[in-house]
Image 1 (tube, rainbow, N blue to C red):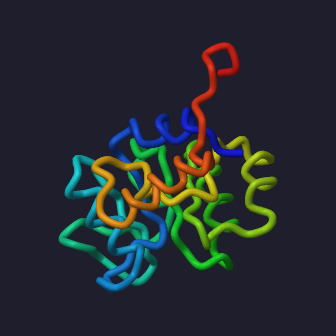
Image 2: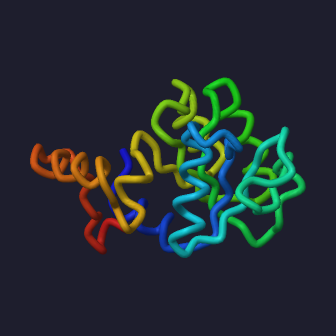
Amino acid sequence: MTDLTQIKKFLDEKKIIIAGASRNEKKFGYAIVKFLSENGYEVCPLNPHASEILGIKCYNNIADLPGDFKKLFIVTPKSETDKIMREAAKKGISEVWIQQGSQTKASSELASELGLNLVSGKCLFMFAEPVQSIHKFHRGLVRLFGRYPKALSPEKN
């Protein structure tokens, strides 16, 4: 189960690869690249069919990614998710966040087998500051009903 400590650790690093980045303004993969790049993050879009997204150089495969990016956000079709995690582990990427809707039944177990620190089942827009609009409202509801992740106490880390 994902806790707030894991989420904060993932977001503290301001360099994030976005697997499933999209040129289509209506897709989540576009919205997340736009939001993060406008809010102090250095993003590295990953899309096998694009050379750039929002003026940012896009990489076509994980092997070609710059080595200084160690956080991977996955917002791909489920059929691609586990393959991307395997490639990421080979590249030395250790922190992975799988956006809701992209996780397979096997993703959590695979992440554990690969030694990846995994955030899953959570929407990045509810945690990356500044949390805005419907995401802020949704975060408030989740807190109200006690389903917002808790931070681990220091002795459990």
